[in-house]
Image 1 (cartoon, helix red, strand yellow):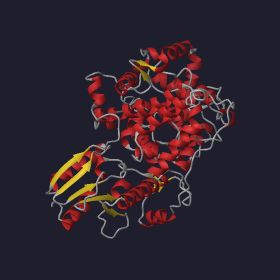
Image 2 (tube, one colour):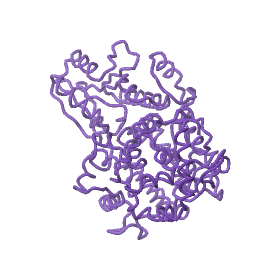
Image 3 (spheres, helix red, strand yellow):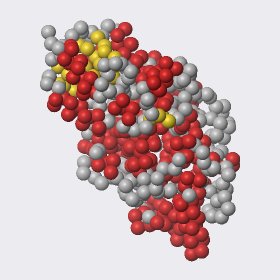
Image 4 (cartoon, rainbow, N blue to C red):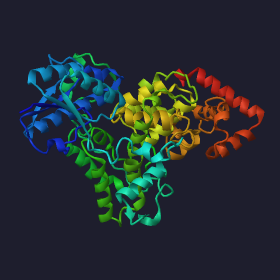
Length: 511
C-alpha cells in the first residue's frame, strides 16, 4: 500500500472537503507554521495569531475525526521554516510515494508549489479547494479579451447560473440592484448591536511568536482574541449575523461611526477567507433566513449582502487569476509618495483617518467603506505608491490574502490598473465622508474648507488629483460633473487649491 502526504495551507481549513470523507491510515495530512509566511509581508499580530489558532484547531479536529496528522509548529526543533525542506524530510521519514495539495489562492504559493513538485521525486497531484462558487478562469473566460471587466455583468451571470434570488429568468423583486434603497447614513432610528466576539486566550501563542522573533505590528489583547477559530464558531457568527444584523445590513452598509466600528456588518471575512465556512453556506443561510422573516427583512438587505459575497468576492478572485502576475506592477498614475508613519501608528489630526486606521491597528478589521472611501481614498489623492499601499493593506487586516487584497487595493481603490474593473477612481472630497459618518464634526480640520487654515486635506488633494490627471480622466463620463465644476473654478481659486495640496503633500507625515 502506497503512502500519501497531503499538504493543507493555513487558508484551506475546510473540514467539509472531500479529502476528509473517509479515514485512511496511509494518508497523512501536514500543516505548517513557517517563517516564510511570516516574512513575505509585515503582518498584524492578530492576523498571525488568528491563522495559527485556526490552523491548530483544524488539525485537532482532523485528529479527532481519525485522520493521521503532522502539525509543525513554528518553534518545532525540526521545522526548517520552509515548505520544501519540511516536505522533503517528511517524505523521506514516512516513505511517501505520493504528494498532494489543494490549489493555493495566492499566485506566489501556486508557483512555489509547482516548483516544489518538480523536485520532490514522488508522484504529485493537485485538488480543488471546493470552496468558491467559481473556478479560477471563469472571470477571464467570461470577459474574453475585453479591456475592462464589469462586476455587475458577471454578478448577474452568476445569479442566473445559480438561481440565487431568482424567479425563473428574472431577479426576485424585478430588480438586480438595490443600491438606491441601501447605503444610507446611520440615523439612529434602530439600535446598534455589538459585534460577536470570541475572546480566545492566545497568550501562549503570543509568547511563542515573540520568542521566535516574529516581527509584527498592531495591538492585541492576548487574553481575548475576538476572531472565530473553528468551523463551529464560524457557523455561530453566521447565525448571529442573520438574527441580529441582517435586518439593517444593506441600509447601513456604507455608514461609519466613531463609537461603533462594525454597525451591521457580518465580520465573516476571516472565517470565509480561511475557508472555515463556504460562500455557498453563507449565502444559503442568509437567503433562507430572509425567506422565513420577510416581514422584518427587506430584499434590499439580502441582495446587498449576496452582492458582496457572490458578486464582489468571486469576481475579485477571478480578476486576480486573470491579471497576475502583471497586476503587481500596475501604477497607472505613476504615484511615488511614501506611506506616512501614521498608517502604522494612527497618529494623525484627520479624525476620519485616525478612527479608521486606529480601529484597523486595534482590531485588524475595518469595513469596506472605511477601507475604500477613507483610507484608500486618501492614499489615491495623496499619490501614495501602490506598492506601499498594497503592503499595508495586506499586512493590517485579519482577512487579507493577496487574491482579495490586491484586486481591491491596487485595482479598485488606487485605480492603478487604469480602469480594468473600476469605471472611475474612487476619490472624493470630505463631503462624502461627512455625509456617511460622524467623523468630520470631531475633526481638527474644517471639512467645508478647500484651502487656508485647517482646511480639510481631502478637499484640496481631491481637486488637485483631478487637475493633475486631467489628461487621463477628463473624458470619463462618470466624472464629467466633477470636471465641469473644476472648469468653473476661477484661476485664483484653482491656484489656491493646488498650492494648499502641494503644502499637504510635502508634509504628509504631519497631517
